[in-house]
Image (cartoon, rainbow, N blue to C red):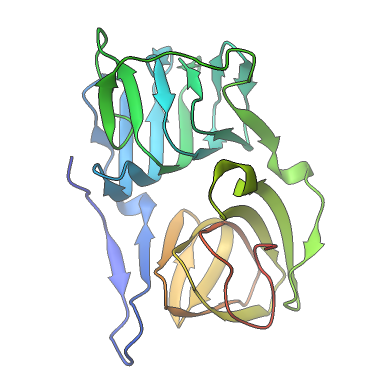
Length: 261
């Protein structure tokens, strides 16, 4: 389905790629082909199977059996999901790698911040739910039944590390090193008055979990996504503090090391 987004854009004052801010709170929920599954799309590419945005499960709704063909990361904003491995709970991140095969159910209304980095396949005899970008029908076989379908990470309990920027601490949620991709997912805590600047060498995304930041003079408050394409020069400051989730597909250029590469 085509993305439906609301965004603010800064005027182009130099020849660097444009940073895009999307307020997910202003987006309508989009119905999928399966009743009870909804999306707020920030970025979607069905050919590549990539997605960034919010996913909502109504209570007692299943995802349907599916297999991930690339990494998917989901942070539980509300509710939780359960599959044969167990449950991913409130404020945990669920990490699915290539080959992860499962059917998840929400026993309460559930909202996820999700980033998909590869297609998802559904059994040929089943129906595609529409909740995953790049969904395809195919023969689904779980070739590693002893490997859990996800890694569930209690984000707020992770240890803190310095980022190299004053007033900015990093918690490493997921290092993609064993997946064939040199990507990272982190949580950043910005104390009031913190600021940093970097150049994105590869696609870098942020979601404002709490507080607020200014991105090159634009406001991004809670439930806003900030998309920084490769080559973008980014300045983020937080006069009163902020909590961010971030995904980087490569190390940034700058004085610090936000993502721990």
